[in-house]
Image 1 (tube, helix red, strand yellow):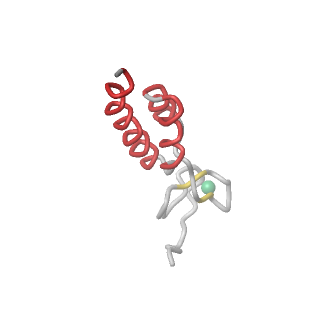
Image 2 (cartoon, protein in one colour):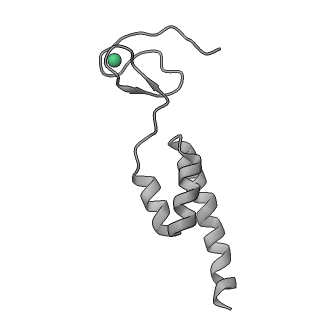
Image 3 (cartoon, protein in one colour):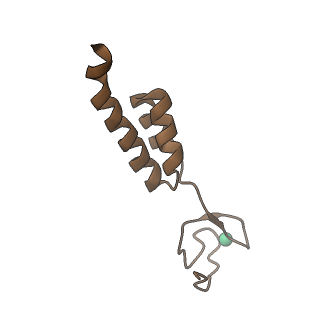
Length: 82
Ligand SMILES: [Zn+2]
């Protein structure tokens, strides 16, 4: 059966999509793209930019978690992790 042969690589695509996605703070999106488009979805999520959770209050540049300093304007932040 063709479906059975394609099953294992497809499952790996889902895991890969989630893994690539999580490195970009888009774990669920990565999984979803891989689910819909298979290997092509992996390429799509790999090309996506990092999803920022925080933004600089001065210039609104996207910041990664635990950023101590804005890469664009140099504003320093206190560590606000609760
Ligand atoms: Zn800034």
